[in-house]
Image (cartoon, rainbow, N blue to C red; front, side, top):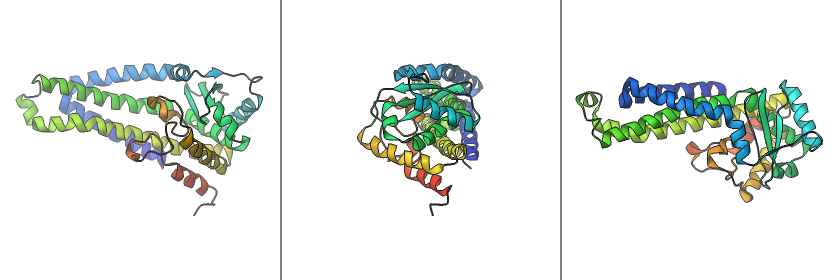
Length: 284
């Protein structure tokens, strides 16, 4: 269901881009903005693992440096029928984890020191299964595709703002397409709408990763318990993180819940836990 929702949201984002592009930038402006956004986001996608790992000063650990963690990751990787990812450690008391990489063959999973001291092996295996699911489901690619289209809409809006400032959108053709007032509305609303859709895609992928993790591990309650613990501690110990990378983490590193759900990178924790528990038939 969430995979279908992702497809619909991506389709809506593409339709929004085409409509806004044709209205504000014409065919030439639309194509130019799209390719500029595509190039920037492709570069980010290709080097995303190196960028984010450097940002958090993550250090790669080998088997002899973290025997238990390495064993857990290797076991879950085998269950998921995936190559063993590289393992990184981040020195932070805030408990969290994220996966990155452009493909299963070029992937990494990073853990904070806080999460290793908080969770037991069963719960940690649930977290690992969640992160490997992101890699297996190509969520990095999906997020970059969404970011490319949303970025192109933002660029078109910027182009339109400059055109309006210098009178470039006051021609008869623009009036025939709805006039300057509609253009002004689109310049303001379109980027916000694109961002809301992009964040909705991020939330949908979290649900998919949770479900996939439950199937890989066969133990949905392990991940549910981990999410409950992580959320409780994050309320008291938020992570010093960049908001632009918040969507990567298994729980929002900035705060446990976002009151403005439309602008949240993660779905509500209570709903994630409820869905995981429902997979065992324990939640009514």
